[in-house]
Picture 1 (cartoon, helix red, strand yellow):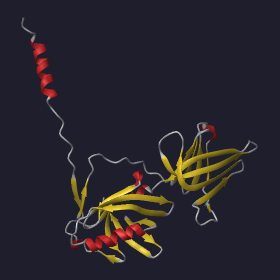
Picture 2 (cartoon, rainbow, N blue to C red):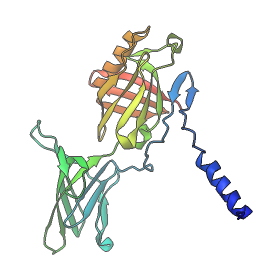
Picture 3 (cartoon, one colour):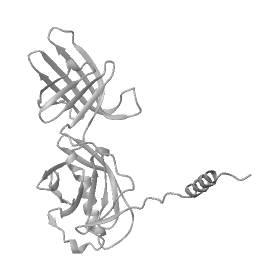
Length: 269
């Protein structure tokens, strides 16, 4: 018995497409202003720009606090009870060894007090571990005081999420022509609190620790090749390790510590 032509055609197409395998994604290498960059195969996660620098949340009942330069916002499932109060500067604990700060924001009808203490914290609802624990008390008019506990994290400035090429190191302007493999650079992934880059001789990477007006480069690691710019690389890595504060102005990233300016980077893209 002869098979219908349509069935034969369908079987041929099935074999053809079954043997087609997608090509692996190739990494794209880009060169900008003598900075050599290797783009990842998958784009990193990135949050929309926001001026929120600290977020906290808790359960039983569910609640959230967001701090910006202008306001302190409180949220809950009961949207009619959400509110925003004017930002107030925090008070630091007298104990220098305890990284604890406290806020008190109030209006005619609302009094919100909360403390932020550094230390690992779990919300009990997920596997996520936070870097700070938060305790709050909320008083509305004549209502009973509500006591809340939860966890939170500082949010790294979204403006740092970019690629930065080195211009100055320990007060001296660098000469791009001295770096045959490309100018030292940083690529900062703000939402992931990490960075990668090129130190002038080797690739490098590490984590970021941030609080308001504070930035540290931690757990820095590099590859281990010897080349012409190795001494400059050691100075750069040491400068990053010593950074405690930063400023952004006119598309430049300034890194400081109490001794002065450690490095200056220029935004590449």
